[in-house]
Image (tube, rainbow, N blue to C red; front, top):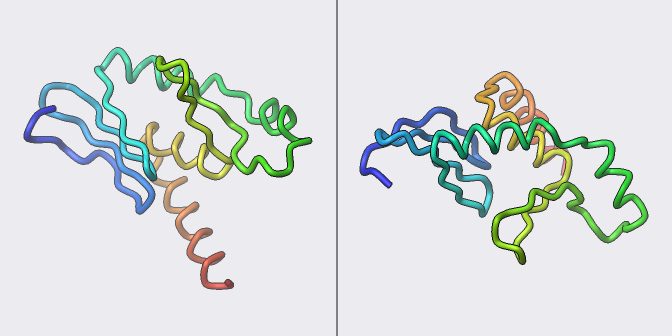
Length: 115
């Protein structure tokens, strides 16, 4: 990892930065990932290929499972799991979709202020 990086997108739950060496740095909630340019491209392709409806229905019978959208890793015993809101926010961050992030942030603030 380089000493200088440019913040591409920032959100209270995560951010995406680009190092001067071309490495993408993704921090989302308690997950930190580093990608080469090629790996980041593969990650974007994979994120785009995930069928939310399939995973929501796949684990629908497991009411205790709050996070039902898996993203496998190269480490066989590690799978990252997300609920629908988390996944959509992650997808918005990696796609640099600032409009979606602003909308989700307003929804989160509204929901927290009700509680």
